[in-house]
Length: 152
Image (cartoon, rainbow, N blue to C red):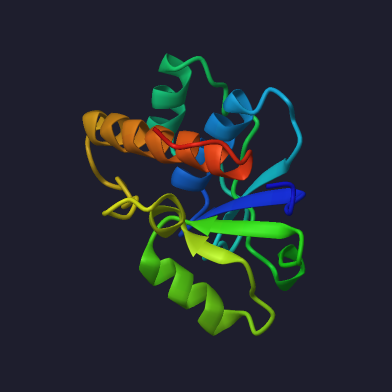
């Protein structure tokens, strides 16, 4: 599916799920065919990544020390950009806020999974680990779909 040149993962604050999804995708996509970004829907100022997300990522061999939140902007939308948000509610909020929004899907919807990627914010480290595992499963499916391969 060479339709897209850019993939943007979006979570609420841009300090955990979307940053992890971006890092997971970059680790999977060794061909580097897509520009991959992370955005937050509600970002008043750039913030570092949640320390528990950093710890989980580090345990998986991913360095998030240079990452920080960045707000989703109207300029992020385009015909060659796909936006994957973490929940169905967030998809609705994106379409409500941006009149030019297009190619926005919840990652659950895009991968035909049953449940959203909910925020582990305020949870224990184990909650972040479980969230990572589920997100990794979905991002692997995203990679296969975008490359036009069969999902097992």
